Amino acid sequence: MGQVEWYYARDNRQMGPVSSVELKRLATFDELRPDDLVWREGMTEWAAARNVRGLFDQDGGSAAVATAVAPTADETPAKPHDAAAAARHPFDAVMEKFRPHFNPRFVEATAGIFRACGSYGLLLAAVLTAAFAAVATTKTSEIAHALWGVIWLLLLVVLQYVAGRAFAAIGELNRATAGRLASSVLPDATVALSLVAGVALLLGSIGWAIGISNCLLILGGVAGFFVCAYLSVIALHPSMLNIAIAPETMAGEELIGVLTFVLKALLRLTPVAFGAGVLCGTVAMAVACFLASVGETVLPGALATADVAQRVLIFSAALPLAAYLVFLFCNLVLNLWRAVLSLPGKLDALADSGDGIGRGQPDTVTTHE
Image (cartoon, rainbow, N blue to C red; front, side, top):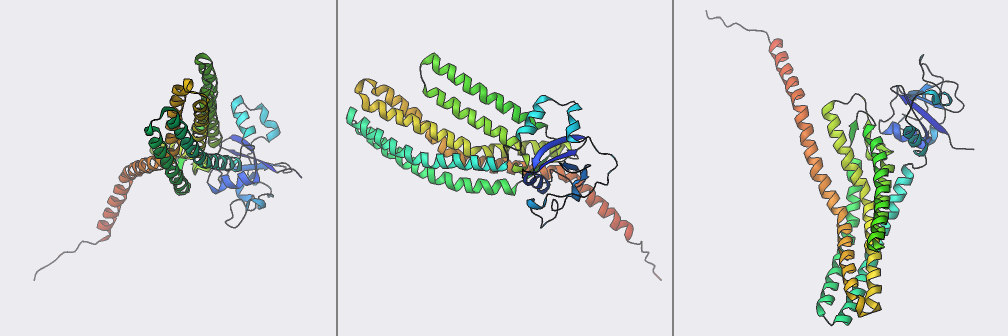
């Protein structure tokens, strides 16, 4: 039996197909409202989402999202097989087709793989750094290479530990903070622009590598492509960022939602950027070790390659902690801005409350006999 695919419609815009699990997730994060319409194969008409068993029930799981009662709405959008007549941009159709395949489970699994690659890659890079320092000390008879090798070794090991702790805190921050957008314009635009940026980085790095005869530059282009592609996948599912699409969102709250989306997308992007950067630095360090062991004639090139590799490794290893601190600071600024936006409403409520108290108290006249 194939997986049940659902379509849903809101504000006269049809979206889908999505799986039952994704439909439940949309409802959980208020990206699907009870009044929105849903449809799946086997239903004669569209039904209000509230009529789907288990979709909005607190105890209902995603497995229960399989049956729906007959709709009560008089006006329903066209069925999915009639939707081709609607005027839609081809890119919207592409996103709708790929969204179920690049689902939240894929996003989480990809982040876990890159996080593991970065963590173990730092340990391997530390070993390679020590090996390079030993070879460089032997070739040049300079004790400074050995001392720097010990320093880099300790720093990489410490940053590997710090990165693991930072990722745990980043996961909690993503669950604890939320935002709202009036539409899916920003997520959709992020999908398109990120893909274009990723392809541009990849092709640009290949051309640059050919121009200066340095194949290591291609590693940076590949890493940049993976990071941009992962950002596109994240933007396909705003609910994973705890971002709800609410058309009634006011302009001020929309601005906060935009900034929150950007910050949380970058926060979600950190594991992939961390892993890709560490892998690039580790490969470059391995190349430096190989060049240093070949002969003294290529030792200057090996030293230059090792210097670049160490910088990339330190930057990538420090990225989780830096992302955590930057998000905390920016979120503090956003909370202050929320407080400023809510201040006029609170003052009006306070004024109304004061007027009500004044009107509710009868005037008393004191007389003296």
